[in-house]
Amino acid sequence: MKYFIETYGCQMNVHDSERMAGLLEQSGYDPADSDRDADVVIVNTCSVRERAEEKLYTRLGEIREMARETGRDPVVAVTGCVAQQEGEKLLARSPGIIDLIVGTQRVKMLPTLVQQQAESRAFPAIDITTPYDEPSFPLGITRRADPVKAYVTIIEGCNDFCAFCVVPYTRGHERMRPKAEILQEVREAAATGRREVQLLGQIVNHYHAPDDSACDFPGLLEAVHEIPGIDRIRFASPHPRHTSDRLIAAVRDLPKVCKHLHLPVQSGSTRVLGMMRRRYTREHYLDTVQKIREAIPNVQLSTDMIVGFPGETDADFEQTLSLTEAVRYHSMFSFKYSERPNTLASRRMPDDVGEDEKTLRIVALQQMQRRIQWDLHELAVGRTVEVLVDHTSRRRAWELSGRTSGNTVVNFPGDPAMVGRLVPVTIRRAGPNSVWGELADGAGVAPAGEISAAAIAVQD
Image (tube, rainbow, N blue to C red):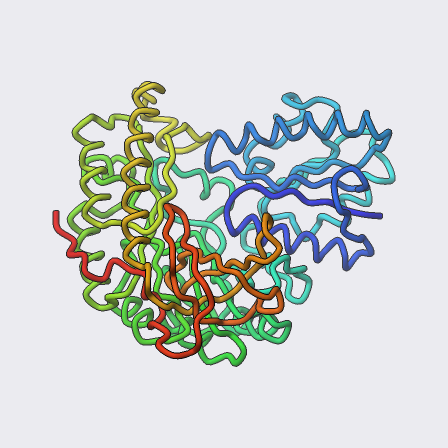
């Protein structure tokens, strides 16, 4: 029996798919090259944005056509946040396609549920129960898809209930994973050759170990830093409200911790931030950015931004543009607001910014961000930086790709045997999303995170 998993969404979903793959292989399944030769097809979904849901329905239609063309009849399972959110409603939207719907907290039951449906498909099976107090991190079963880096979840769920966010409703309340278990998984990743570990949590810097009352998130970074074989440590996503002086000092002082912070702001307007229930102001956010830049001059910042939130005026959007110009992010994930089921915004706030206006705003924001990124990448030309090579190019066999400590993508010609190695690269050419360079000798390698906006003063 062969399985095929298709994943939409964030790093947590990618890691969930790795865990599903491990569970299935532990139960005797083999990976398939594509859905066309799979006995089980799993679509692991995201519901953070409406577009991600629509991708699911489009994909289910394609799977039905594939089954007709090939004469195969795979077990089709939908997992992840849309499965948890929609449940039985999925069957009405895509009749006759889905055999199994598995919620976010029932991943460990996947092999059993798949086997039951393979033997008898009289009715679709649905398991979206939410035993949120049960651990959902079985050790030793993850089939890691990336040969260089390892995702390690440290928190599941969220207690913040931001007005726009569906995560507390699909992932449940916040549960901290034991420190000892996290460190054991990092050791396992290092033992299998992974050079980078990325710690995951909806609010990753809210971590406090349930098995070690003295260990907060900076303390966990210190403990992971001591594990041999790991060269780089990343984490996503911290919340601006929990970005403490201790965390800033840990990023500054621990050499393995990458000099990059993803600091989601969502809006540049204090008024809109209040409606979003983000619990910080524009001024507090800018003060935090200034503090980070003063402590870590080579740091690179990225963010998330929403335009067209209910009640957002032209003046509010101008505040978003001016904050973006002031901070000068190295990258940004930007979205048009869309209502998410069960959220506070969907229940209490009319979606009153027109679609055309949302489009105008997102285009203006993305144009500004593209210009900023290009300018920052131009500043890197001529510098030599340390790159962790993570893959070969899909388009050119002779080209490698990797990232700096600051998370800039660097492409350069080289031997595929270099994948997994830290190498010095001199930047020769800039683009809006990445830079291009060539291997340098070991002399004069810039400090980690050198491609930065170090000279930028954050001013409002």
